[in-house]
Image (cartoon, rainbow, N blue to C red; front, top):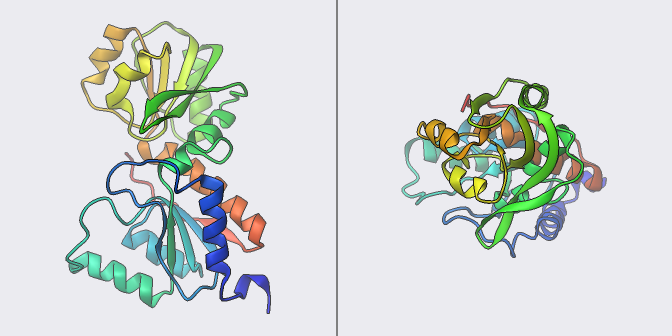
Length: 257
């Protein structure tokens, strides 16, 4: 029997990921349940990775032959009962397809090598970074000192994300102190600016941040909540795949947001 079909492999993968990501140590937002969210029969023969756990990504993972789905946004963010309608369909799909779900939100964001921020910074060529943006008891973003024209930075983001970001040109054309917090951190622009950055890269933010960026003298790049958070699950799934010698693939389900 190969290691990929061993009936206890799921437990080993979960233990490893929990240690790697420090799942039990890192505080998250209420409703975010990190770690194993749904069990299968214990076997792991193929891993799928997706940004979001949803009926569509679960079905796509099962169609791809996966029995473990690794996600950034898990099944539980609000009360999940009653399990009716589409929620019932999701539960039935997971159980019927023998699909386990492992979710990692902030623990994956902050990981120094596999995290969304770390991998995106690497893709942008930022090799010297420092933690910044204090939230939930720790600094969850990364910042760097790097002199770069904001047009060049936009081009690098386009290459990394596959689509051009939306830019709020509130600051100088030359960026010198750049901060990165993937996902939906735009509403915390004032907090990011208070940490001394002049350019902020995140996924999305509200309309009023355009005027605030001008007021603060800060450039803002919105790369998309979804696109900026594809990096972590890809890196984690590839790492686990290599560690446990099972194949993996990415389930791309872009939201456009």
